[in-house]
Image 1: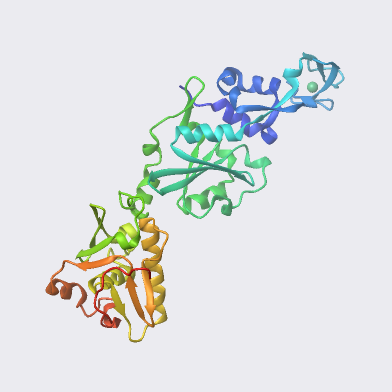
Image 2 (image 1 turned 90 degrees about the vertical axis):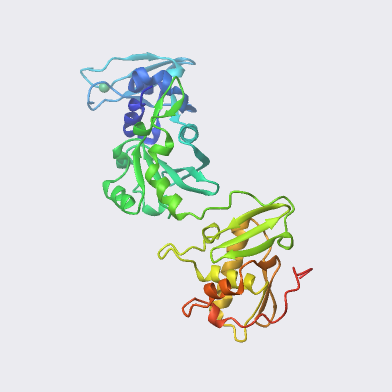
Amino acid sequence: MRPPSRLAQSLDEVVGLAASRHEWRARLADEWQATERFLKPRGNIVPTIPCPSPGGEGCPRHVVRLGPDQFRAVCANTPRECDTLDLAFADVEVLALDTRRLATEIASALEIDLDYRERRGVIQIGRHLIAAGAGFPVALVLGSAAWRPALHLHNFGDAPGVILLSSLSSLDPDVGNQLRLRGNRIHVLDEVVGDDYGRLVPLAPPGILFHDLRDRYAATEPVRPPWRLPAGSTWEKLKFDLISSEEINVSTAGQSQKLRPEHLGLRNEKTGGVTEGWVFLRTVIAMRGSLGFSNIEPRYVKQLQLLNRALREGMGMAETPIMKVGRGEYETRFVSICSLSPAELAEISGRPNSPGTKKFGQGSRQHRGPTKGG
Ligand SMILES: [Zn+2]
């Protein structure tokens, strides 16, 4: 197993990532067999074949067609310095790098969920997944920055990820530094993958190669509940039981799961406490699913919208769980019960600085179980 280093060097030197088979074979030498599969015929022939000398006025050698499968590459220098080549169609045929095939094999080697897109010289390979739904983008930049239009940062997207280069010269150093400052990791391709009998393989397990980004994302991405709701679940079939300030027992169809703020993205990352959204949820459950405001402020309406969205996305449900049923009055579609004693509840909600609770009015109605038909 070895890194395809001649391929990387060739990509830096071959303008447009396309050349004759004759040229690729000469450049790739002993790597030709292992890397040929990444080259795809374009159906046309090259006009010239490079000369071995640095090049006089008549260089490079011009390709002349002598017959259907008979070509000659001739240097026009006088006196003639470069050998004349007699070639077949296969030698002068243009082969271009098959970037999709390369990206697909890199994705397979580095455990990337393939989502191939190419835009302005940047290939988006896909996302390296660290947990269900959580992952970071992996991009690929090939060839020399010198013959490519300047790459702009916005090409790489907003979320920090991994940028793979065919060589260090693939990226302008200033752009590279800015990308690193924004949390991106930059790797040269032959540091992370090698060729193993015609197949790209990781040079280290992807979990180790990408360990720092994995740790970073694992700490910030919301952790989804480890089970999915049974097929056919509706909000009306779910029972939410508040069992502590940061735990709700959600049960349905004989299954139960503890729902915590981080499962819904309702953990305040700076303080480690919970967001106002979680306080709303806790409160509406403590009020047995019915919450009334004597004078609702716009910011609470906004908080309820955010909470509804967090519940829909976090639990994979399409419908809105907390419904407006009247002016300043809201009800949960799920069954709300509270296993906390009145004293425990007071302990949670009674603190003077506890956000939200001061403004909440008394539940306007007694709990009537889940709302049926809205
Ligand atoms: Zn020449």
